[in-house]
Length: 401
Image 1 (spheres, rainbow, N blue to C red):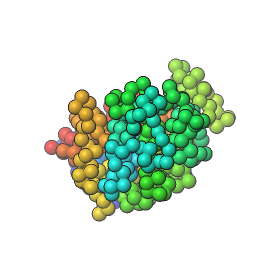
Image 2 (image 1 turned 120 degrees about the vertical axis):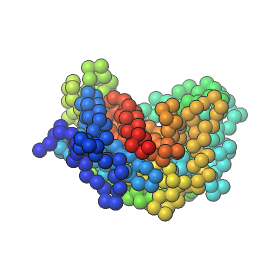
Image 3 (image 1 turned 180 degrees about the vertical axis):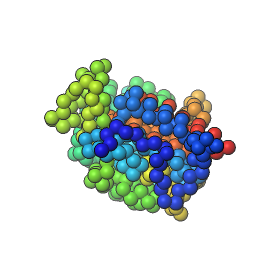
Image 4 (image 1 turned 30 degrees about the vertical axis):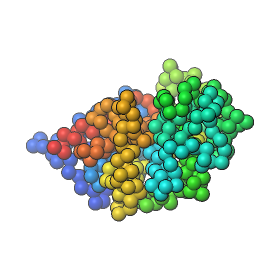
């Protein structure tokens, strides 16, 4: 039985129909990805990461993938590209897609006051006469902040309260979670950037109210199912939990107290021993449109391919080419990163998003010119997975010349 053995590229299994053009052997019988294999194995060992999975997409296909380590330590279950994981803030790209689909239908206006769509007034109390707009949410300039109640809202299982109840109670003065200082910035909406998870919960609620169906069901009907993402969803109740990858938190001497202070993530019998990887529960939060898509590397590649290929995957079109171009355009003269939700990296000018949560680290980026994209998952928030991402992308780029 294997517990810590890592899968080698030399034992790589191929998906049916996938054309692997990048694994041609050189005269010495070595794969160009051998160095990637070694680098990832060393990375997960040094950072105490149970499992890591990744893939490369090029044009309209997955060209390479691999998985290392364990998806579930107690069950000795190997990491795989079919395993499901909550992908944290990469989820925002799905929420933005949903909003832009409705924008294409002229049902949402980017410069509209968000209050027009949700049935109650939202204002930064320091600037009561200044509307907060959909555009500001998509560019993280809304002045809505993630207060303490956002972090405290995480709990095991699916959310116990509705998205609308959460957002109302967070953003209106009479609300249970309202705090004028914690929940809003000191600056006027639209004048300064500050990354906001709660604002994307609000965007999900706008989609819900405009589409007249729950946000999770809208995404199922207009994004997941058209792309063939059959085992993808926002809630545990929507997916096959038997293949859900376990999130793990490593207990180091530096962060042991912090881990113990977040016992709500762990079963009651958990022992917080130094040097151990603790499995968290499968958690959620009511602000779910900001970070709770649960999917696999394999199915997330369908979404990335659609964005790379003018909104189309397998004859299903989820966005117009012009809409994607708009989303992947820098929005401010003094900001070299921010598009509409999507952001551009300083490294190689790639477009995409990353994600991080307890026991979760994810990356999804691509280059519009090379049409090369890379996705990485790890079931730990240790280390810096973007370094691995860069290694994989540069190897793929070199072999594509």
